[in-house]
Structure formats: structure tokens, C-alpha cells
Image 1 (tube, rainbow, N blue to C red):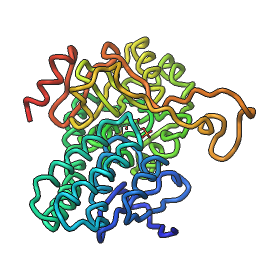
Image 2 (spheres, rainbow, N blue to C red):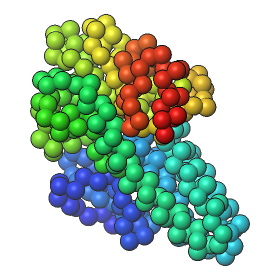
Image 3 (spheres, helix red, strand yellow):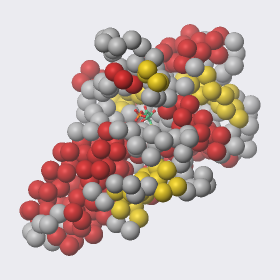
Image 4 (tube, protein in one colour):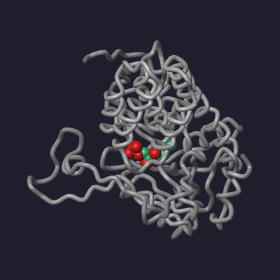
Length: 353
Ligand code: MRU
């Protein structure tokens, strides 16, 4: 299916519901081409999540919800029970795509609950589609509130390091970590950004630098191996990253390499912040139970299509790592900033709801 079309660079909305289809930026093509893809089948959305056409915890949460919205339209069910059973099947397929970000399960569950509250096939169709659209719109509002809360922690002339992409491209729009940086600038503070390249699939160079440059930020790209150099030489004075899952003890699961950045920040006395919505906080799981996604070896044995390692070698390619709470200066959310001890401050964020 070639239903992609190109648009100009001014419309950076990662995922959207348009004319009963899901429209998303194909992030595998960035930064060389800004291509939008359209899907009318939930299996296509599942595939897009798996292959990183869409990625980033909040963006895959909303994409999962839109996947179910497509599933209600695809279903030939004539009774509520049949439709719920079709949706359960679609949910299973969407859920199986990526295991670490809790937002995916959160988004799917939220839609299933709404679906079950409907009485007829028609009512369920309307409820599911409108809830998924609402979830997408709310994501932007949540990011803006998070940005406002986080911007208080940053000062004029700060140089802020970030890892991976926790920006507009990882959410519906605006971003979590990059949302905080955007809000800091909107508050009249002048900030610079240092973005890590983020091997193996380079969300930092391909996506973060792309979107910050697009929005006129002063951004410098560094290889992942220059984190220590940048901190030791006073090039950075704060760090902010996103998260895929945060458990109630304050252990943060985020893109592989985050733990190294946080450890290095501690070594150099540099504040290390995490920005994430409450939908990324998993109050149920223990840190040791969180599944770290292992990805294919070709991501490491090559850069893009170019092979950079010999054939037939063993590769270890975890997509995420865990940063322990003692390395984290604060967790920025739409409901405020949690400070250590997290076991006390994280539950309070939910009480404030
Ligand atoms: O593998 P990815 O690109 O989905 O990983 C994304 C990250 O690790 C982000 O930092 C995280 O999802 C937060 S996005 C607001």
C-alpha cells in the first residue's frame, strides 16, 4: 500500500484521527523526509508500533487507542458481545507489539472500559472513537501542564542535555522532556540543548535534533560516548529525559543509555530530571518485573542500511534500561514535581487528581 503523502514541515502532529483513518508521521523516514502514512486497519497500526513508524510511550498509547477505533469500524459484529470479543482480539495484537512502555496497555485498557460501558454496537462505535480522539487531545494539554511545572526547575542560560526523543514526535504534540524545554523558552528563558545521538536507532540525531531545529532551538548533537566529556567540561548544567515506565519506588525505565547519563550526571553534581505523564506511572509492577524489550541485532550491526560489524556475531540489544531513584533529582508530571523519597511523593500525585 502506498498511501503516503508529503506535507510541509509546519505540521508536526505525530498521530491524528482524520476521516475515520489514523494518520501518522512515518518516523523511520526522518530526518530526510517528512512523510505521513494513513491506516484504516488496526493490524497496520500494530505493525507501525512494532517497526517504530510511531514510537515514544505517550504516542504509542494514543496509537493503540486509535488502533481500537479502527477495529470498531472494521468489525462486522451485530451484537455488543461480538463487538467486545473482536475488540479483545485487536487489543491482544496491539498490546503484543512493545512490552516496556506502560502507556500502551493504559491506552488500550481505557478504551476497552469505555467500549464495555456502551449498550449497542452503534453506541460502542461512537464511544470508542470519541474517547480515542479525546485521549489524543488530552495528551497535548497534559504535556503543556507538565512543561509549565518543569520550567520552574530551569534557569536562564541553562544548557540542558536530553537523551533519545521525548518530544512532540514521542507524544501527540509538544512533548514531555522537550515540552519542558519548550515551556522554559516560552517563559522567556534562553536555553540551549545538547542531544545525544542515541544509538542504535538514533532517535536523538534523527528526531530530537530534527524537531528542535525545526522549532528554532540552539541544539548541539553529541555522540553517546561524549556524555562524560560534555559534563566534565562544564558544557551541561541540567538533564531532562522522558520515561516509558516509572514504578512507585521511583525506578525509571527509559531508552537504553539513560542509566549511563544519570550516573554521569550524579558524578558531576548535575541535576537529572525525568518528565512523564501520570499514564507512564505504573503503581502495580515492581521494578524487577518490568520487561525490557530486546530488539533485533541488525540495529547494532549496522547504521541504517550500512553494515558496520562482521557477520554472525552475538549481539545484546536491549531497548531500555532502568535508572534507580537515587540518581533522579525530580519527576516532573502534569500534577506537579515529585521529589525523593518517591515512595511518598509519587502516590501523592494521584491524590491530587
Ligand atoms: O524506542 P522508543 O523510541 O519508543 O523509546 C522512546 C523513549 O525511550 C522515550 O524517552 C520515552 O518513550 C518517553 S517519550 C515522551
